[in-house]
Length: 407
Image (cartoon, rainbow, N blue to C red; front, side):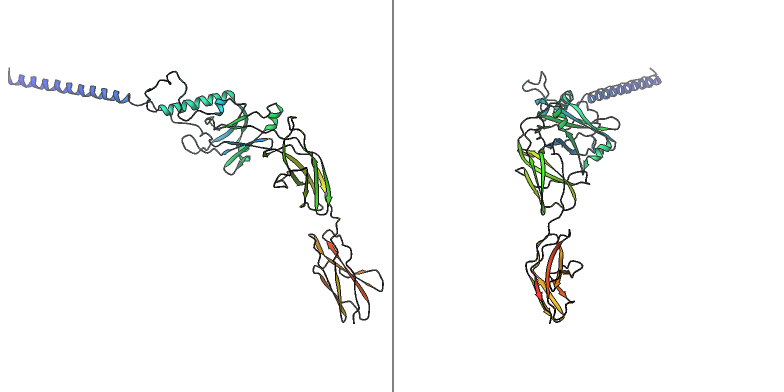
């Protein structure tokens, strides 16, 4: 073979070897890439929607179930919730035990293969089980629950107290439907403007106490410095059953006020009477009384029919018990024992001469228990008396008289 022919043959062999090496490399790369794609579990999509409320709590106050929970402000991703649309409140009457006893964290969802001993647990299986348990619990909740309320943004604002939302569910409506004291389960769900919904919150349960009926026959006895309120105990609760009473709370408001404030008594009244020693004179007042459930002072019964009261001060202060008159030249100094009265306005001084009617010497009440009569004349015989007067203008009887003759 010619030298040129040999070189061409060698070049051809080199080219074939390079092509084979390139093809082998591509095949190895493809095999390695395919093997990498099969490793690991498929990842779930990123969570969406608001984060579930996790601190829902419920207690009974009067004839309301009071739900309290932190204001929802986060998405499932942890980002701020900036497009809150509403909060939905759900209620379940007589919930099933499976609803009120959620699955233990990490417990397996029921399946035919779950009972095999020594089964191999794949990576991520625990998280999948928890997700399945949550889904099963939510499905069970939605099967039993009824939506009790939808709180719009304005309604949420009205019910926000600090960092918490407070919603009151009236139990009287349920009692009217014959629900009685059966357990009630509650949960809430947060909704964004785009319609995305949070998972169901933690589920809380309340077994309500049936509130007593209203006390009857309220009466008021007006005495000096106090208003005595009496009433008759309710015999039945709001469902018509015998009532179990644990005491009473008494409420008072001004006639011009819309609502009652805190009760007048810190501790419940055991009997059926209460004495209000803080009632102001001359102000129209309104009283009512509520009975408490025995063993649960937070549950108040229906209010008694309101009782209007107007206490007028017709009670004079006591008279000074002693009066001394000390003549000094052309004047007489008077000193008397002070009077103890919470509404004392001062004292009025009177003087009589030669058996005539007493004449008032002080135009306005004097505050201090002494007075100087500078209009006295020598060689005249005077008799003095003092009366205490209160802020309503009621005058006491006269003090004992004191005689004086300036010299």
